[in-house]
Image (cartoon, rainbow, N blue to C red; front, side, top):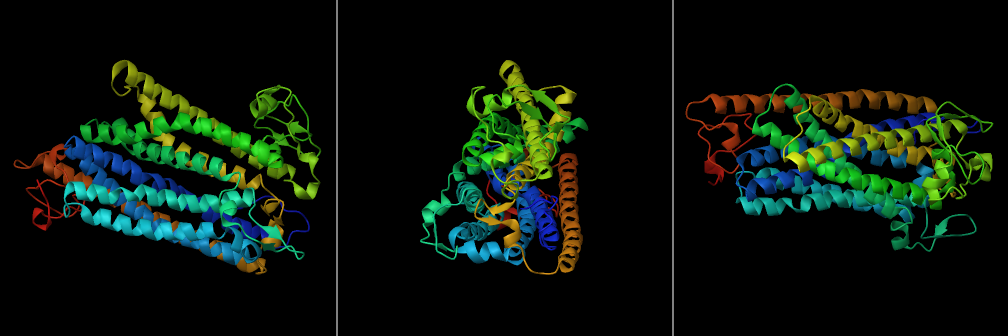
Length: 489
């Protein structure tokens, strides 16, 4: 939640390791979030295609994606639980004073988490054990549960950015809490939809990237074409939508959090006709070195006019705004996110134009190289988005109501550094195990496909679906049960 930045001299010693620990665990968890939020929807799209067109290849892909969905969800349970504990352990001042105001968001997320776990279990169990239509219908609530979890987290985070729904008593403690206002804050709508679409396109590019690599290695069968086309199409449709939503949320920050906007755009003094800096470094005296200066552009982007007044960092005292280094970090994160988003828009347009003109996939090797990199680029953009959001809000953990230094734990800094080291070791093992399981699944699936394709009496993999009978069943064919356990023609 709080990325490492240089601290003020008066900051407690434990603030830096607490931030590092929270930043590491959040950055690690967020790698899994796109698959947790959006992979269920992409899987159901493929599942629907398989049922609608009686396409055994689509059903096989959906089944295998559901296995990946379950594995990453299991790891996400661990990393998400660690984050939940860290809020109370690392930031007791935040939860102790404000938990009754915004904590309902975490409650919603927890219930959604348990619901999603149950639904994933039912969905996995249903392959070859339920009627196809019944199985598909039981899977439909999965995306809704994932979106509900995102709703809870974004409600809490947007409240931290634009807190409302409470009054303060003479001691500065919140009273008269209005839950609805605390949930639906001014930044909730822009943040929620920007986040959801980001998860959708990121998951789409991540899944499609696997099959793009397969194509680059010479695998051009229908299995790989379909595995690429469906998630990439979902991502390509979402990408221009996200570009518009990104512009809208930046403008919302301009109106509702002007000092954060000044940090993200490294604007030092309030003025009109403000230039836009692409990258560049802000110094403590307000000067900017490096980067590319575009005259007037910042004012134009903020208010559609070069005469738009943009609030600068010096509009508030130094202890109520990000430092020059923090502003530079937020600015770079924001610019990298926008740069990656712009590249993804061009990639989506390339894909769309080829499809509209020729009704086929692009043939260019460079397109598939770009598609293979798009998933990683999307994850980097998501990470940068969170960095811009959290670092740009400094020094506040609750915007203009509580500083980060007031919320941090009293635990000794040496203890927190030891905790960070242990968490890094555990997470390396955890993500290494995840990678090993996914590679093992890939190997088993390839062996199963090769055996079915080479057997004299066995259909090729394209004609073998989870609901159809199989001549042979072996471990590693995607986990299918024999027809006697409920398989239907």
